[in-house]
Length: 89
Image (tube, rainbow, N blue to C red; front, side):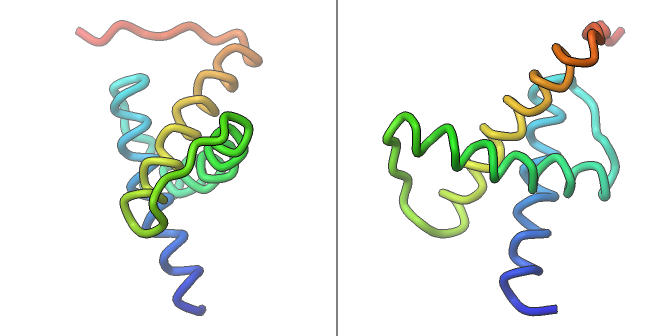
């Protein structure tokens, strides 16, 4: 595995964890966080390009982009699946 793959997995895991906690208040486990974060990085990159938003390249910029995209992806998945948000007690 090369450094860029490891970097993508780390960013994906962190972004998925942050997005899960911000959006639903839940953790999706390591693998789920990675998948959500990687999908989020693609979605976030697309959204930021459409809006002509330029973030500084690097760890923080990648993390912000992936987290924003992951939140949007979680919202879209919920809307498509017809799921409802649970209220945590």
